[in-house]
Length: 320
Image (cartoon, rainbow, N blue to C red):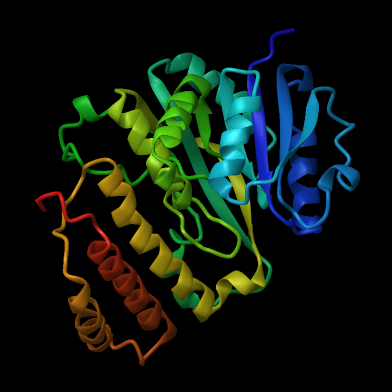
């Protein structure tokens, strides 16, 4: 029996009922369990998950404890421990559709030059969200780019600038990545440990790691793809639907996007002086009319993160 896929779940102090649903969905995959392995990376949780989470239903599963806190550290450990050529990163609130792994194998066999793929990431909300929440679906890692596949190779793209980032590029939720490319990424991170800070660490909402991975493989000449037959449900807890949480998330995402691009020598904006950050933030507060609504406030905090990111750029490079 061939073994093709390693499923990697990175988790830190997981919500038990969510993780139970994640594991149940994996147990119900139509791809035979003998054809994939399961790694549960316990990223410095307060409780030792190996003593609480039963993986005995899977014949090729392992608990792995990673004491270095941070999503990047946990993923790097998963990459190191994986035995198979295809890696599927599943967050502890991602419920995969039954054919997710089976479809993964078929898609990559048909598209050997694609290095990373993803699909639809649809929400299941713990509480009914307010209508304005839809403006921030991208911040919540929710994506639906329709029912037609989309593929992007930099050297073949006619309508996308060379330094642009395809909007349908895979995100961390359900990210499927070839291991040979994951190992290239891991080696680059080992040479520049500042990239460890691009992933979430504890309560810090930095979220640039996924973009870092995708840009790395695009630069290596590989393609990325969106395939609607890859579908998962993202469980969204009530605390992630608040104005304060989304403001923090939008700030961190905007700031880390500047950092990620700079890691890849992409500078569509010029560095700004640190003294100008506060005046720019104040000006944006009024231009966004941040006091008028929750969505306006969250948009303003995204602008604030961008200004902080631009001020933090190294000074030894010339802005484009």
